[in-house]
Image (cartoon, rainbow, N blue to C red):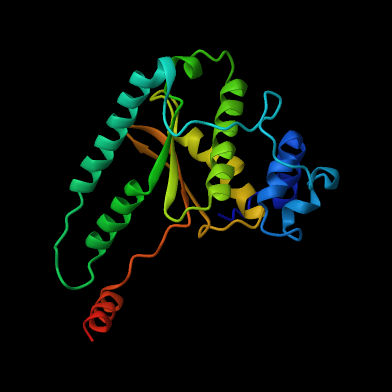
Length: 232
């Protein structure tokens, strides 16, 4: 999103200066070395290998909750998916052979749910007990970018991650966070919506949804053409 009220150069400078430890990861997923971000990324860190250890800000996260948090985390995921299912059933569909806006919306939202292969639950006591808003910001930032690099490196079509926040997390704050710390930086790295689709939304709990290489749904005309070719 482009906001004429935001100084893009200033925003880029602020973002990359305040996240220098992340420069190797940013450089590793940038689509080329002539994207806007490279004016602000430390050249010495561009060739560094992405290594996962206790000192790296990025982490290898499990696909879904594990350990002591598993039961509580899986219940949170179930609640979010139930809310999503309810939102789908609230969409009036016609089942017509003609293109319909509601039918298309139903299909688009439904397939986005099916693409979710990873679930990171921050709606837990550990996150809630963080003492400062800065610690919560850093934890959410770490989770988002660790998931982004995982999806890009795995490079699987129609894969995605859902990051679930506590109910107490303000949705407007989440949208601002997503815009300034995920959406815009991805654009500065040359990563467009076709590679990583990002959305912040409320489905039972506040969430950030990351989708990797989402395929297009064939139009009715394309579907009919494919059926004709198959029957020839």
